Image (tube, rainbow, N blue to C red; front, side):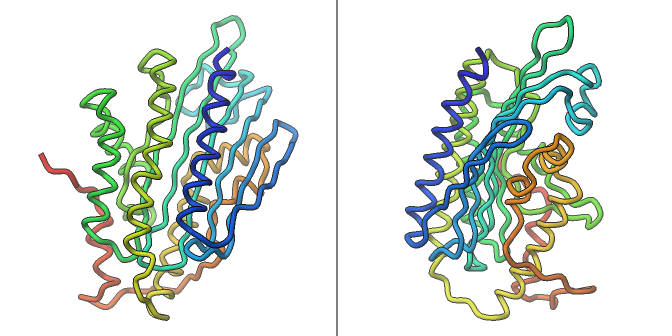
Length: 299
């Protein structure tokens, strides 16, 4: 019965998020790609070359497998080899304007069926922000919204999941955060099932509340070749994280998921530059001040 309760919620979030992004873009609409693979089915929606978003991908998937992949059981060895079912909505938005941050969000549900035991279920997800030319008021709004999402579920939820986000979205080989954080959580079954479902609903709705006001505030900011080149360079960090560290990418590839949908998070254009160092005191160098965990809300 668990999955039957989750799927309508995820499909509703899929529709709501796409509609909100499409409205904010005001240009190209999403193109739907319904797919069926060896493990299940889903729908990938991609907006390309919009008025605001260079590329936005919002993916819904529902898959089943005969054995949990290694990436999902590294910290749950008792579930190794167990049949599983997984469903989720994941998205990444790559804006055109370098003053508009890239954003990512996902909500997901897993249930495993170990032999001779009761099913084991949990939720995961969150949202995080990756600016190129950051503004403190934008980051503050982002974290205020994240805190408001968590508040009804306990005073400890935002601090815990904010810290988890800071630790997870960290490029160890670079010694820097991917962005300014937000929320990240996994293995969540700390509340009754219906409460966990309410939390997932709040996170999914909170993403657009956190992101779209920032987009509206920055999307008309003038920029030139310098800002565009820096944006493309910093997108390289996004690629590095997703291909080296992201557990969702590893899970999808190891479980035999649909490669095109798994790699939908990649930016459409990116550049790498050997040994690039921003000029001291430049707007580009200022980004480094934001790539360290910070208590944005004080207290």
